[in-house]
Length: 204
Ligand SMILES: Nc1ncnc2c1ncn2[C@@H]1O[C@H](COP(=O)(O)OP(=O)(O)OP(=O)(O)O)[C@@H](O)[C@H]1O
Ligand SMILES: Nc1nc2c(ncn2[C@@H]2O[C@H](COP(=O)(O)O)[C@@H](O)[C@H]2O)c(=O)[nH]1
Image (cartoon, rainbow, N blue to C red; front, top):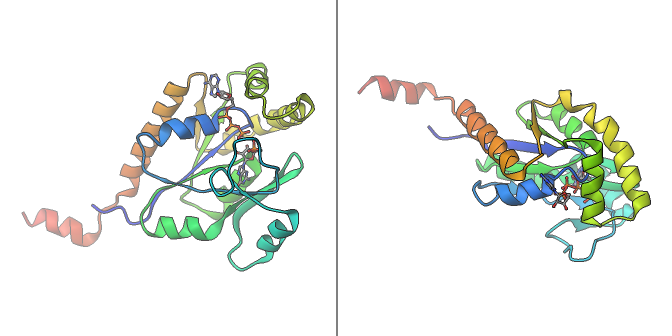
C-alpha cells in the first residue's frame, strides 16, 4: 500500500496565531519537507537566510514571479512580498514526501485553486485580543506594524470557512494533536489500492 505522491499540507491563519509554534512541535513527530519561502521582508534578529526564509530584494522577487517555474503562490502582506518556490515542492511531492507550507490566507487561497489535493488547515485564535497579546508578546514588530497585522487578521478570520479544516490554537499541544489526526486521516484517505494490489489480496 505505497503512498504514491506526498501530501501537500497548507497551514494558514492570521499573523501571530501560532503557526510557526505549532510547526516546530509537529516536526518532532511528523516527517515532512518544510517549504522555505522567499520574502522581501527584512530579517529579524536571529533569522538566517536559507533557514527561516530566503531574503530577497524586490527586484529578485519580481524576476522570480516571471521566471519559468517561479512560485506555487505568492502574495503581498502588509508591505512585503512572500512566496513559495514551486520547484522544490513539486520535487518532494513527486518523491512521495509530505510537504508543509506555512503561509498567509491570500496565498493559501491560490493553492486551493491550483492544487485540488492540497490539505488546507486554518489556525484560529481564541480572540483578536489574544492575537494582539501574542504579537505584542513576540515583540518582533513595533506597535504600528502589529496594528496593521491585526486589521488584516479580521478579514482573514472571516475567510476560515474556505478551508477544509479549522484548528483552534488555544493550547499548542491540543492544536498539534488535531493536526496529527488530520495528517493520519488524510494519509489513509490517500492510500487507494491499485487493481494489482487488490488482486494480490484476494488471491491468498
Ligand atoms: N496556544 C498559544 N498560547 C499562547 N501563546 C501562543 C500560543 N501559540 C503560540 N503562542 C505565542 O504566540 C506568538 C506568535 O506565535 P508564532 O510566531 O508561532 O505565530 P505565527 O502564526 O507563526 O506568526 P507569523 O504568521 O507572523 O509568522 C509567539 O510568541 C508564541 O510563543
Ligand atoms: N502567501 C505566503 N505567505 C507567507 C509565505 N511565507 C510566510 N508567509 C506568511 O506571511 C505572514 C507574515 O510572515 P512574517 O514572517 O513576516 O511574520 C505570515 O502569515 C506567514 O505565514 C509564503 O511563501 N507565501
